[in-house]
Length: 234
Image (tube, rainbow, N blue to C red):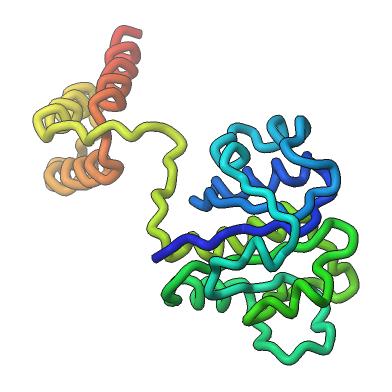
């Protein structure tokens, strides 16, 4: 599966190029092409806006025309909210991403200038039009938002790894868990918690079920046992 090329056609602000690069790298896309950027390239405003997506900006290629930018691409998709009377398939981002994943050869996705979008000539180069279903009374997406929608849909088939908030520790060994359960039982016995006598086994079984359900790691078990020891000293 070949990742699509992102082509920004006549982008106006370096900041928006940087934000688009950030959106790309978030979802595993790295090949950025720029067609006649208004303020030239490289642009000092792009780097800070990219928030670390430097690899995308450093490898960005600049072209004079859209046709030149997509000359090596077998499948070209134009993002636009206007159909412009061109008879082409109209796809959602999800449908376009599916076509890109299954296609042989390189694909490119065209995004127009912030204010005016793609020209009719740009759209004419495409095999299909991609339109995002949005509020008809407020159909305004900025450049980075449009890029991130298409990049996300493509990434769903790219097996990207979901990041975890923190590095997960391995589960504690059974011996540590048994020691925690025994610690609870030892502190609860003198309080009369395990009564009446005929319910002792069932109550301990329930307690064991509660304590084994979360899948504690060693650090968590040590913390709990520290809490129990502190309470026992009171």
